Length: 116
Image 1 (tube, helix red, strand yellow):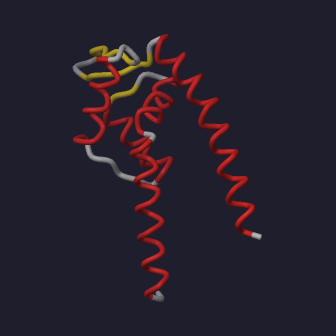
Image 2 (tube, helix red, strand yellow; image 1 turned 30 degrees about the vertical axis):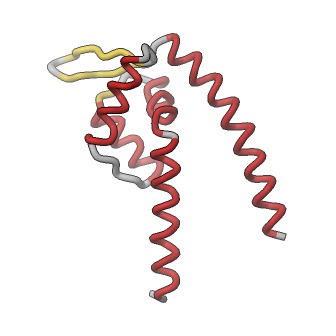
Protein backbone atom coordinates (compact mmCIF):
# COMPACT_ATOMS: atom_id res chain seq x y z
CA UNK A 1 0.00 0.00 0.00
CA UNK A 2 1.27 3.44 -0.92
CA UNK A 3 2.40 5.60 2.04
CA UNK A 4 0.15 8.46 0.95
CA UNK A 5 -2.86 6.17 0.85
CA UNK A 6 -2.11 4.88 4.37
CA UNK A 7 -1.99 8.45 5.65
CA UNK A 8 -5.22 9.32 3.85
CA UNK A 9 -7.00 6.31 5.40
CA UNK A 10 -5.75 7.33 8.87
CA UNK A 11 -6.86 10.91 8.30
CA UNK A 12 -10.30 9.85 7.04
CA UNK A 13 -10.75 7.63 10.09
CA UNK A 14 -9.75 10.46 12.44
CA UNK A 15 -12.22 12.82 10.76
CA UNK A 16 -15.00 10.23 11.03
CA UNK A 17 -14.11 9.64 14.68
CA UNK A 18 -14.31 13.39 15.43
CA UNK A 19 -17.65 13.69 13.64
CA UNK A 20 -19.13 10.75 15.57
CA UNK A 21 -17.85 12.11 18.88
CA UNK A 22 -19.18 15.57 18.06
CA UNK A 23 -22.63 14.19 17.32
CA UNK A 24 -22.55 11.48 19.98
CA UNK A 25 -25.49 12.77 22.03
CA UNK A 26 -27.71 12.88 18.94
CA UNK A 27 -26.46 9.47 17.75
CA UNK A 28 -27.26 7.94 21.15
CA UNK A 29 -30.74 9.47 21.17
CA UNK A 30 -31.40 8.17 17.65
CA UNK A 31 -30.21 4.67 18.66
CA UNK A 32 -32.57 4.72 21.64
CA UNK A 33 -35.49 6.07 19.61
CA UNK A 34 -35.94 2.66 17.99
CA UNK A 35 -35.70 0.40 21.04
CA UNK A 36 -34.30 0.55 24.59
CA UNK A 37 -30.65 -0.54 24.65
CA UNK A 38 -27.86 -1.22 27.09
CA UNK A 39 -24.67 0.84 26.97
CA UNK A 40 -22.90 -2.11 25.38
CA UNK A 41 -25.60 -2.35 22.70
CA UNK A 42 -25.24 1.38 21.97
CA UNK A 43 -21.47 0.98 21.57
CA UNK A 44 -22.06 -1.98 19.23
CA UNK A 45 -24.65 -0.09 17.19
CA UNK A 46 -22.30 2.87 16.74
CA UNK A 47 -19.50 0.52 15.75
CA UNK A 48 -21.72 -1.25 13.22
CA UNK A 49 -22.96 2.03 11.74
CA UNK A 50 -19.75 4.09 11.67
CA UNK A 51 -16.90 1.57 12.05
CA UNK A 52 -15.76 3.48 15.14
CA UNK A 53 -15.25 1.59 18.40
CA UNK A 54 -15.96 3.91 21.32
CA UNK A 55 -14.94 2.95 24.83
CA UNK A 56 -17.39 2.63 27.71
CA UNK A 57 -15.50 5.59 29.23
CA UNK A 58 -16.73 7.70 26.31
CA UNK A 59 -20.32 6.46 26.10
CA UNK A 60 -21.39 6.04 29.74
CA UNK A 61 -20.66 9.65 30.78
CA UNK A 62 -22.80 10.80 27.82
CA UNK A 63 -25.59 8.47 28.96
CA UNK A 64 -25.44 9.98 32.46
CA UNK A 65 -25.45 13.48 30.96
CA UNK A 66 -28.50 12.71 28.78
CA UNK A 67 -30.23 11.09 31.74
CA UNK A 68 -29.57 14.14 33.94
CA UNK A 69 -31.14 16.33 31.24
CA UNK A 70 -34.24 14.11 31.23
CA UNK A 71 -33.69 13.07 27.61
CA UNK A 72 -33.27 9.39 28.42
CA UNK A 73 -34.18 7.19 31.37
CA UNK A 74 -32.52 4.14 32.81
CA UNK A 75 -34.47 1.01 33.60
CA UNK A 76 -33.18 -2.15 35.25
CA UNK A 77 -33.98 -5.26 33.28
CA UNK A 78 -32.62 -8.69 34.19
CA UNK A 79 -29.71 -7.21 36.14
CA UNK A 80 -28.85 -5.06 33.15
CA UNK A 81 -29.08 -1.28 32.79
CA UNK A 82 -31.20 -0.42 29.79
CA UNK A 83 -31.75 3.09 28.50
CA UNK A 84 -34.71 4.47 26.60
CA UNK A 85 -35.49 7.86 25.16
CA UNK A 86 -38.08 10.01 26.94
CA UNK A 87 -40.75 12.11 25.25
CA UNK A 88 -38.52 15.15 25.83
CA UNK A 89 -35.67 13.26 24.14
CA UNK A 90 -37.93 12.35 21.22
CA UNK A 91 -38.85 15.99 20.73
CA UNK A 92 -35.17 16.96 20.70
CA UNK A 93 -34.30 14.20 18.20
CA UNK A 94 -37.02 15.42 15.86
CA UNK A 95 -35.83 19.02 16.13
CA UNK A 96 -32.14 18.19 15.75
CA UNK A 97 -32.78 15.77 12.88
CA UNK A 98 -34.36 18.59 10.91
CA UNK A 99 -31.57 21.02 11.81
CA UNK A 100 -28.78 18.58 10.94
CA UNK A 101 -30.50 17.54 7.73
CA UNK A 102 -30.57 21.18 6.60
CA UNK A 103 -26.94 21.64 7.65
CA UNK A 104 -25.92 18.45 5.82
CA UNK A 105 -27.65 19.57 2.60
CA UNK A 106 -25.77 22.89 2.74
CA UNK A 107 -22.50 21.07 3.37
CA UNK A 108 -23.10 18.77 0.38
CA UNK A 109 -23.83 21.79 -1.82
CA UNK A 110 -20.51 23.36 -0.79
CA UNK A 111 -18.63 20.11 -1.37
CA UNK A 112 -20.14 19.58 -4.82
CA UNK A 113 -19.33 23.21 -5.75
CA UNK A 114 -15.65 22.66 -4.97
CA UNK A 115 -15.48 19.26 -6.67
CA UNK A 116 -16.05 20.87 -10.08
